[in-house]
Image (cartoon, rainbow, N blue to C red; front, side):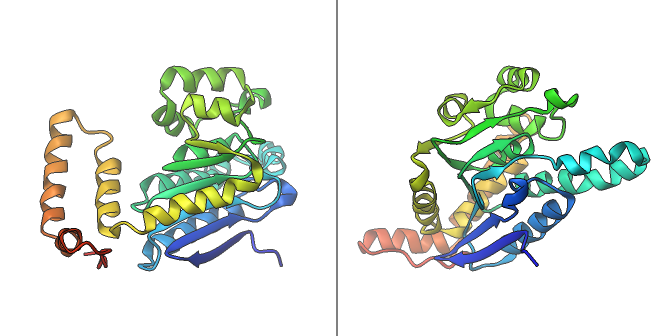
Length: 260
């Protein structure tokens, strides 16, 4: 039986690979549930400081599974809603993680696949990759991923690509702010792993606190954001990692982080 998601840990990096190349790693219900469980496993593992997400084969993720879509008219609305919870929960899980997620976009990322790209904290894309929200061409709108895309690139551009269903190249995705770096196809994993390795060498507590601030201040007004950030700063200053970082700097050595 094929593993829908492959997972391994290397140098404090949890590497998650969507592994259904026949469907171009589409977000079937089973794929979503397996990704959720794998992401939660990586987040809970103290050995994992950074998560890297990629796809097997020639595509990163083709979005929703069309075979599942075609059967929806045969089902009750309540059943469709229940089955759709897996997709919603996947994006809730991904955007709520307090460990950095690096996207290694090895190929096309369409629909929900573009949502995954937008949800990653840093993304390296193949120059051959094409991205887009093509749901409008199927009589749909990218509803679940729309808030994530808006946060990544702003409301005007998010609505534009949703209205048009345009499929664009990785260079344009970088211009839009969806992708951080575009490299030749054979360099995608090396570049993504290099960035992940750099992050994994940082204090895991600092990364966690930083993402706590990033995630939990999204919907606050500015004064509350600053108050929350100041509280987290106190926690940082009282941590073992800050003490170790200062001592290592003064002693001109590499710090040995404790994550607390």
